[in-house]
Length: 163
Image (cartoon, rainbow, N blue to C red):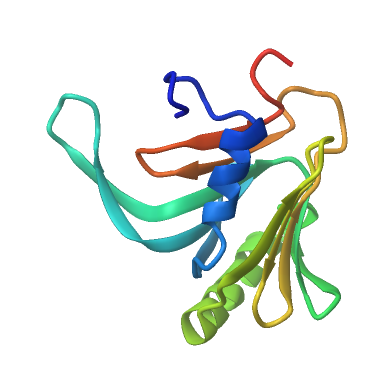
């Protein structure tokens, strides 16, 4: 959240959050429904409201509910179009690719080198080992979105609330 309790939707607050990704290790990739998720940083804990329960997860996450791709050495390795069944009873192409990618992440622990955001919503995360994550909103639908969050902290969303 921003200093006024609202999402850090853009501008300086959003840019500061995205810059905090630089130097973090990419640790996980998975899907939640039709959304691609990538996790960065060490494991942290945060309270779940006033219940006293505690949740755990990575310090940072990016959730993409729009086209996205993971690129290595100039070739698309995994992307939003892989969220389709491979064949009868074989699962999703995304899951197969994500399993292999998680093994690579464990061995190589790539760090974020740079994060760029374009006004029209494109997000590019450049990492070591010639890796890149591109998040590419391609329509004006509000449900086509992405967000970057710091657990129990700031988050930036695209499109910003009210757009």
